[in-house]
Length: 526
Image (tube, rainbow, N blue to C red; front, top):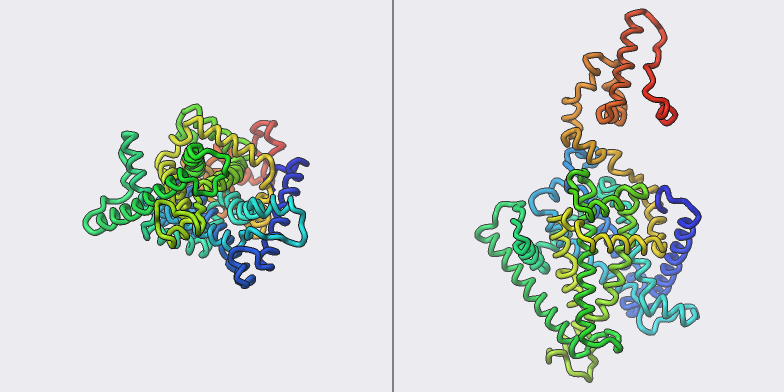
């Protein structure tokens, strides 16, 4: 449930979306228990359910972890070294050199693999029926995959993205997150999607901009090993792209028969571009979230986008965008899957005359997933990570943001807010500002970590040479407030002065300092 939004309309959206989620969950588990999904059809329903939930939980960590790692990149990890030791351990490696880019590469390919496991274990077979449900229910929830989309989006993706977008530190402060991070780093090391690096280099050159060198230039074996993986990735991508386009022109995909072949090709690349923009937008939004207003520039579209994201609805438009974005991306993936998945029967000629074994593998659709991963996901994320503010400085970003927020406003996935609120309450998550303050507050402190701040700030022993007894033992939040707010500092100075006057006059009563404006007095209470 969105914080601060408890009006009747929002509560209704939360209710009907949660009901849809519960119904979808019951249907999915009912199909697995009756051996009517791809994996359980072999008879092992319990093993299927275990794999299903293992994949969902891991997917949730991968999706939420991305929000945390990207959003915390501009923040000095020394600020949370003591309060969040595991988050610090991850950030110590993630923020070094190009490791964040490596994580993003591995993470995206990992998502494809995990989602495959989710669909394999929970996706219904073509003839699935359940408990004499009406035909329209079977068509809407089973045939179209609507129940799987809702469950995967809300449980495996959106609820953790909602919490991780505003509680980044708390979300990754656990060893499951640490394991997931290193798993993504290993996946990147294999090289399946290394061609994304070459695409990033090409984009920088076309823009006439020098790529930021986050690490010393590769030499010798490291350079050879890197380009070997790039060529390996390019070879797999090229074959997948050629065989997919050939299948489209031969009419041997699962695309609707009424759509002309040329339109299918145009639709394929158009949807890839939309998915790419949405993938890049989330990276840019998280990256800009911790920047000051000055660092966000003065472009009209960038400023309008930032105003919607960070200044309205108490900052809830950022997690709200994640919900609308996920719905849009899933919808695009559904159509892209139809466009790219090949459908060649045993008595038909294979695409481009390839072998039966290879054709059977291509009928599973993995080539479309690989193309989408590299061309419509990772490459755009790398570009957005390199130019987050520039990515916001376009009307296309603004329009897509509005569309995503509209979809989120329909409430179809509001169950994610409910799950996020339950998860946040159980885990005890708090907003990042509680621990490290806002970007402006960190900037005013020169990005110092807490231990350095304790030494450098004279206010801990007193203000203007006047000692305030016991203030060095005051709560950290009060000391932070005294440091960042000049009005509070002046108030504490006056308290110290009055204490000095009473002490010198032998008085027993400490008179309150002068008022600083009646308009605010009613809002500040001890």
